[in-house]
Length: 235
Image 1 (tube, one colour):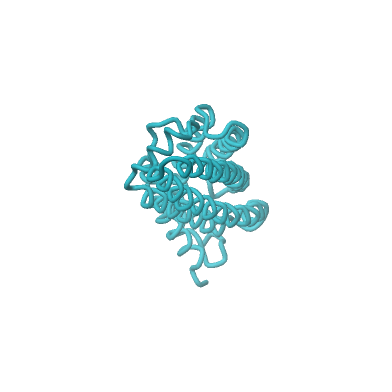
Image 2 (cartoon, one colour; image 1 turned 90 degrees about the horizontal axis):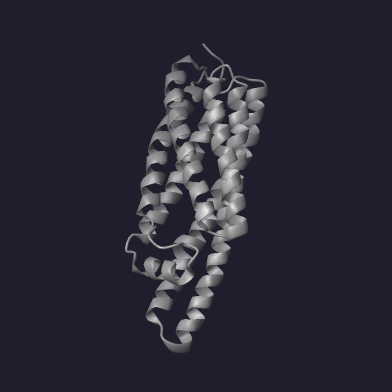
């Protein structure tokens, strides 16, 4: 056996236990004082933020690492129903990372450029700049909603795989399903109400569950790794 599954399990552990805190810290660095649904207040706060690029880069890297952890996790399931669900989850993982890249391009780059131009403008140019920034904001909201829906469906699929696997405790699958369903609610709320208080509270709560689940999955993969052979079967 070539030990591929063992190596992936250990790499997945590192990706999970680094990616989850990185995503959390980067999100906490994001400006959060103003109501994100109040365009003018939010734009003023964003324009004054000096960590904008780094917080968004950290968020994107965190999502990439969590995606890598899911790819590694898929290699740890025993052949059969659990592995089949995990393979379907890989499609969602790739789609979620692509969606996250699009979101960060809009939010982390385009929106920052527009709010900076708005902050520096005056007169008619300032009015035009704020309308342009608002348009970019709506694209961001749409992408954020779709990312939540994509990632939550992926988590639900992995939760089902975990519930059907004898290699993972069922409660881990339950936590994954809970986080995924929470993100479904958050994504739907964002699509309907933008970055409203309700949408943000749902997103924060569901994200906290997901990050805890990711770390727990990472720890379990490290424990599981010595028992795996190259083809994913137990030794």
